[in-house]
Image 1 (cartoon, protein in one colour):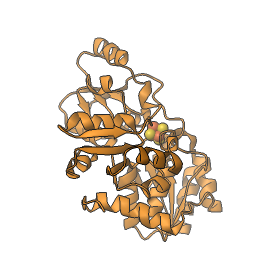
Image 2 (cartoon, helix red, strand yellow):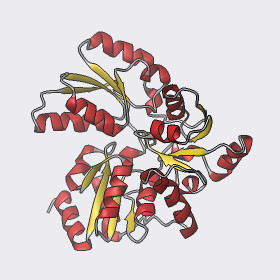
Image 3 (cartoon, rainbow, N blue to C red):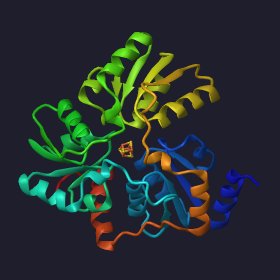
Image 4 (tube, rainbow, N blue to C red):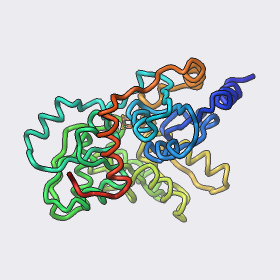
Amino acid sequence: MNLVDKIKELKKEKNAIILTHCYQNIEIDEVSDFVGDSLYLSKMAAKTDADIILFAGVYFMAQSAKLLSPNKKVLLPTLNSGCHMADMIDVENLKIFKNKYPNIPIVCYINSTAEIKANCDICCTSSNAVEIVKSLGVKEVLFVPDNYLGKYVESKLKNVKVITYNGFCPTHLRIRKCDIDNARKLYPDALILSHPECHQDVTNNSDFTGSTKEIVEFAKKSPNKRFIIATEKGVADRLNRDSKLYHWNKEFILITENIICPDMKRNTLEDIYTALLEEKHEIAIDSEIINRAKNCIEKMLNKTYSLV
Ligand code: SF4
């Protein structure tokens, strides 16, 4: 039996599901029950009656799955798959940041640990960050950990000052304005699609900026045939695969070759098999943190934006 079949067999045996983030190595899709962005995956996991959730992604994502499914066993294929951006802020630094700007509501990006979420007012994703900040109806807001998503939100809203923590995604910041210029010269017929974690002069010079999900939806609906993908390689890989599979006749070109998140690419099929077999790398979160962090996510999900 090959590894893919062995994993599928093990999933049945253990009543387990595999959630795969779309920045993962593409071969992992073969054993996955759901593929998408982190919030979609955690929401799908909460709806299933699986006993075990294996999250092929990074640490904060598996934590989010645990927050929404506290009674399920949540596993990570490798324990050292953190997220550089999420790890740029800890509770101590968060306290310093909040103390510097007292009495201002604080929004955290979903790309943050459960401990950070537990100490913030409301969560957001890259899809709904503008909507969430706007809904607060305040003139000033604190935003952690991503400086670039925070500043992107500010650029979309009139009269709201977004005070950002200085976190960033090293993978998205590798994309430069000169890469956009080069792509325009090489592929004048292509549309450039970027993620709001990128530099502002990248998003400002793109044809469309949005979350992973929004980029995929835009690319599918657009009548254009060629696109430059200014986000993680996994997105371009899956779009090219689906274009062949479903005869879209579209081409997706990664803006430069090195837009690869090393944290995301750590997980392999072998790691998935071993973690599931031995039920190892289980996510454990203190119950008080679970309650507070879940509340932070639920305020976003239920669109109950009034801050307490
Ligand atoms: S791409 Fe950036 S934000 Fe996403 S997991 Fe990797 S380091 Fe974190």
